[in-house]
Image 1: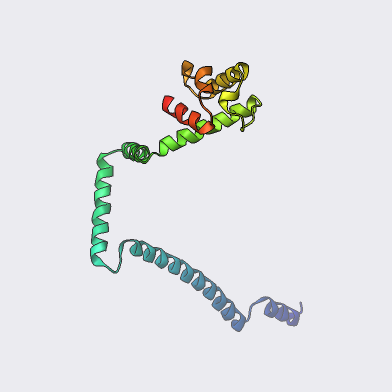
Image 2: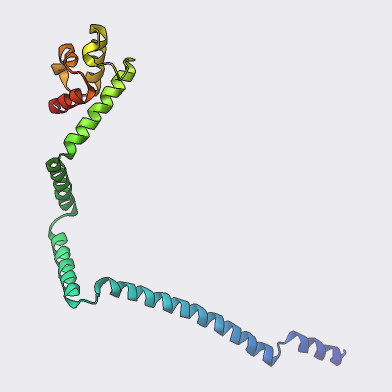
Length: 175
């Protein structure tokens, strides 16, 4: 048995003291760096949460805190679906007061008239009063399929209008 070879093999396989400390230092730095990143992200999250509720004006901060507490109390007693119902209802009423629904109905009626003209091969420059009875009847039936006006739209009514806008206003009032 050669003891010199055994000593050389064991010395090479064992880490040196300087290399071991250096490796430990490198591992420690890596763990410390990861910990520092985690702590920084945690502190950033806390700072964001505090910034949401703290403004320079203390009165505004207190007012917003009271509003949020009041909202929490209201949400405890009133279901969200009821609040959404009243919100949608108020939006609808505001749109009705401003005339938005009338404009929307008029635009839809104009679109239906132009689609009916295309379907029946009637040019947009042709007035309704210039249509013959067959074209007027086709136009009436096409519009009745698109707009729920029933029998109120007759050939005589259709031929009494010269332009699309006037007919669209009449259709809007019928709906």
